[in-house]
Image 1: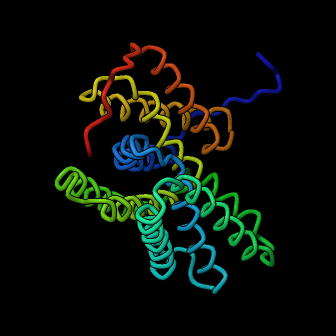
Image 2 (image 1 turned 60 degrees about the vertical axis):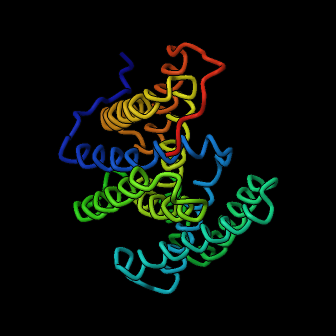
Length: 264
């Protein structure tokens, strides 16, 4: 063993709530991710997450309380505005929707950087937005996100295709706004896309449970490893997600004629 490597015990009083946060993110992001992959707009979560983060940054620049309802409202309004814009662009220019989503992500990122330019803690805020602070989630955050997850999943599975384009973007904005403040932009994207990619060749009936299971295993493995090795949790979970999903994809039989997962 490397004498310079120090291993630490897993403190489940910290890792446990973080794992619950990850499972809550997966609960809504896995079914949304399957639909995103089907629609071919894989960067939508990055754009919406960045826009929601821009709302948080703008609220912080105004001096609002970081955990206050005003900041949450700013994030939700920003995300809903982005969702409304993407709903309109999909109607107007459906052939270049993915390019427009990427452009919106870059613009929101640049505006956020400019707003943080005069903040002495701007670099730290930007890192928190991207990588997240999953180990430091508060119980109040978990209850709020749990309630929102129940609402999103109820509407998603209850209404299905009746939601339409606008309903899809609305639910997506609500889910991403909550999750980006829990786990950061990188884990939001990983939770949405990686499990969906891993199960794309599976039977439609198995896609959801397999994707949920892979995501849950990745969060448990990544959080445990980050605690044992004392490494940044968000980055370790992303790498664990990639590893688990690559292995799952390799184990699943390749069925080129597999139809896309039903909506939702």
